[in-house]
Image: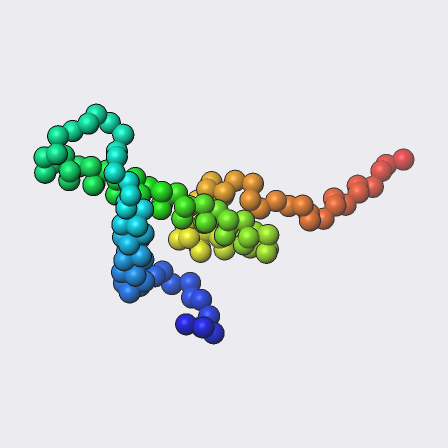
Length: 123
């Protein structure tokens, strides 16, 4: 809804149902026109056709998953460039600060770290 501030709570059932519906439709769209699945040619029996459809759908869903992961990487980079730290990025994806650091190592750098104070020299 426009003008509504995002919350830190995880998506509800409605969101999960909507995402499932969208991903299923996207998988169906990606399946169209993909007649062949790599592997030996099989007879046109019902199990062979069902297996072929299931493998094409699985391949389409794997592409969707990778695309979403790439989009997450881009969003994490944008968040870091906007000043977010690992704790905030981790919370945004329901993981710990350490989990976010492992997922995106080197995302946050201390390029604006203050210079160390000089130590007084003894004469």
